[in-house]
Length: 216
Picture 1 (cartoon, rainbow, N blue to C red):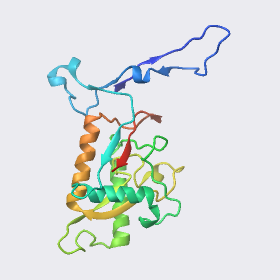
Picture 2: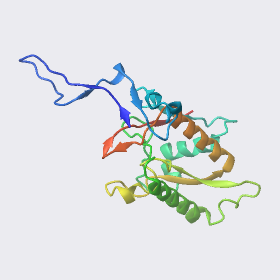
Picture 3: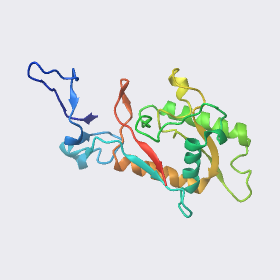
Picture 4: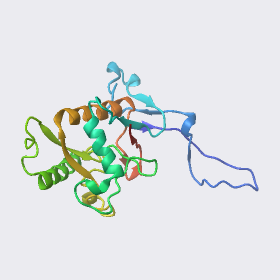
């Protein structure tokens, strides 16, 4: 769970406020959560000390496409998905993946393991369709894994249209990448989630938390 302070504004007559309900304090205060999947979930045995604080901002997940970066292939894949969707698979002439600006953010998918698996199945099916069932070993001397964007651990993942009929189909990219790069990218994502205390993105349909990606 998370706690974020709100205030209710009341203006003296004859002035009126455009806000009819609660208003988030925003930058004036942090957010406190006790999510069971984040650091300090037990408080060292003291319930009063469990959880942690995070600023109420949209953090940025950094990936590097520079030579020598361990996650370089992942970063290049994400950049293609964003800037050159026409070269990515599956084919979708209207593909516009989210996650690169504040109007199209990503949301962590933590509380629905079946949906995470559905995202992975859709991505792997794409790798098999376009690169063959042996995509993991088809390049001599290179062990590969099926990488996907948006990440399987997001509500915007490959199976999104299955769960939200209003969302377009095939609005994702999947591609076989070297196992080492894919593993490095996954580690960076996990550390980012933990350090920024990214919560499951939605609660009862309400937007709770979000993040974006940046490629250097």
